Image (cartoon, rainbow, N blue to C red; front, side):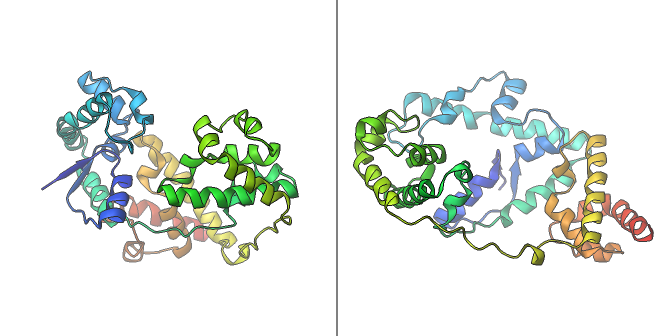
Length: 305
């Protein structure tokens, strides 16, 4: 039985992670819309354009983890799925009419193979926070303590860290370093609820950071071990230019033709035959036969320049 999603990737990852689900025979209305080159591919835009249905965009920012759901949330959820099957049928007919059905099937077939990869918490992750580079050494020490505190509380609450406190708020707290609850409440990004529930802990984390040594930047991986050689980079740039022309001719986004990852694999492997090209992971049979001869011709010309 076919399962219809819109933007299935996140749903697949969460269902695999939390419940161990396996998937097969999927239809993704967003991927299909992008293959058709439609300019607006959000579900709200598609339902409005094709069915005159207006979804309440405020519900996209609502707290769906809170129970019970509100009447407005329930109404939004019903509309969110009520027209999904008719939309699927409409898009299916367009794919057939445009000769894109085989391409879409190949894209749908790749979805069940998406794997959730658990990323371990990186205690040095605060270095990658936007705004961290402008902080002084003592401020970075405070940021580190706040970052570690946020992770601990996110785990206790079983919530994403940004739902506890945003990166922007962490940086602002590290800069201002309030000493009282009153001063804490005045900072943008620190809600009254956060200051009431966690104010004292935040202030304690700030004090801990103020007495801590300046953190040392983590060692970087040697970039020379990861960076492609000049010939590979030249092939990659040429492949990207080819893709841009191909995508413009089709009226689709470049990644619909081939992703950056696939282009880099082709650039590294530098295949000379269709059989060699077929060994490139995630290229797919349809794209191999549709784009393969062009790709091999391009690589051949580059080799003689």
